[in-house]
Image (tube, rainbow, N blue to C red):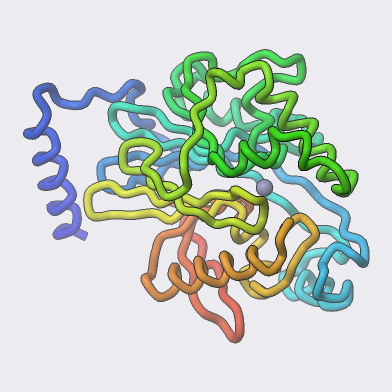
Length: 319
Ligand SMILES: [Zn+2]
């Protein structure tokens, strides 16, 4: 611990020495935890997991393309969860780089389910107001990731933030030609993406997955869940975090059974490939990982277990 802390401090001293003026945080780092805002350090950055809520999604017999309801219910029962319902937890990630406040995905703003929409309360608990956010990075255009950009009435929530989105995601969802023949729910996602982005289209920055999207935050193509679905790696000092976005969702189903294809993975085979690749890399390289639908605070490590993988969550700790 001492050595790595020294290394981190040495690293940050170099960064400070290189700059003409030392970086000044837009908002001071939090000094204590609150129930729905969990802060942790990554190199010189402070990260905050922001809890938005949970959705109890009913699953019918067709929910999984390649697993039976009995198999899914058995996996749920193994972790003491009732049958036929998928718990979908929502956690956005705030990154304080010291000079920029970056928010990765934006929560549901209460527009997906009554049991979610608390992200901004937890942002406030962390001492941050929506106007403080400098950059918003979007992983993909499903409603639970973009709805927080606007209120139900269409007002922008993060008035000063630059919004960056994956180029292939924009190309898919913002083109009405792609709407024909899609399922009812996917049709709804098109309408919702239009509601969020159409009138602010000129303010949106598109990035090519693979590019650095903010200081120390590199985007990673992880297509399949949606056509432009994107993960991220955050690097600060000698430390890194893999932000898996929706490559892996509820870990008791999709880390333990990475080959399962739920209907909301638009290209199931491609999503499985991305999921296996990312889980394998996380386990082999012992990476710290984060994912939007992991149980709060949605951060931990991945280990191999049987033919699948297991999440080892971090232990909650005070600052
Ligand atoms: Zn999602």
